[in-house]
Length: 418
Ligand code: HEM
Image 1 (cartoon, rainbow, N blue to C red):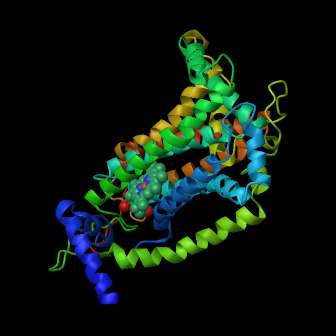
Image 2 (cartoon, rainbow, N blue to C red; image 1 turned 90 degrees about the vertical axis):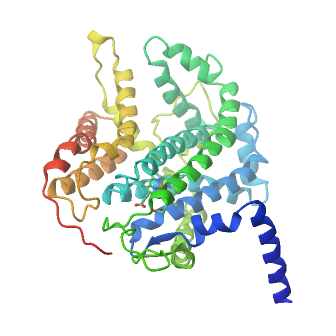
């Protein structure tokens, strides 16, 4: 019976392969794709990002079946999902916790890239597609956050939309165009819904495909920065590599298991994440007459929000208000990530072999990013604003000075083999 099924399967596959080279492509891009033998903890986040992306798509489709995208119905439909829909609470908490998990994994995945110079030639495109993915994820999270139409959805969206309004000349018209109304309203909500469930996810899927294809064209990296393509055996397999399946598939499984244990631990026992994953004012319906006492973004936007708030001054003689300057520097803090492959002039990839300035730069960048994140969740006062200004400077400095210190610092010899 088993033999017969196998025979039938392979004849169907060979019928398909003659018309569409499915097996060849699966082997090339998945099962037989050579990956470095030795990587570390930081190299699991790409696979986990794929997993969480799927979780978001599946739970999102489920939520969409019960959600109402109108100003009158949105908040109540989320209540309905939480109380009446079978396992609705689970789907919603998985989706909201999934958003936080997505960013958490994304930040670690990017940090790995920074540590090991994974963006360096010839992986610039892999990095660029990644940066677009970060930008899209930020947009996706923001659009999704508006959908429950709670107090924080409404007021956070107001803050962000008013930034567009601060752009000189075109700002006010642009804001009305994005909102689809003179004020933030049901018209905004329904277009945000369309963008959140169709447009942005489709763009993200396309970019993930490009991200992976670009990576497979040039080969995956490793923490040593060794080029594994240099030495191959008779079959063409790199000596320091192993086929993706079964080596990587099996080694990823325990990590995926641990991830889900932590993930469901949060979903079941702390889905609000102490107000950091789901903020308290969002359990109250949007009210345009009542501003929440303290408008704070969800934790994953906090570092960038802090940069935005740190700019308390404008450039009056150029007609640039503090709000617009804040917007420019906030946009700049994301834009600068795109050009990192061209800022790093080092001869070596990995931080292990880079010089002392690169190491200091990395620590300064990471500490300032985390401090900005902390400050972004707290109400402002004079001290915190000053600290946020210093950290904003320290966020940019290691990146702006990178072309200088990476070119002149002393590096160590990279080994030939992994
Ligand atoms: C939806 C979001 C993303 C998904 C699903 C994703 C997925 C992946 C996967 C599966 C890999 C191969 C395994 C690994 O090396 O971890 C990878 C590699 C990589 N990703 Fe991403 N990624 C995403 C976002 C990003 C972002 C935001 C960046 C940086 C801006 C980025 C930069 C990279 C780089 C540079 C590599 C190559 C690493 C190397 O081989 O040395 N990715 N990504």
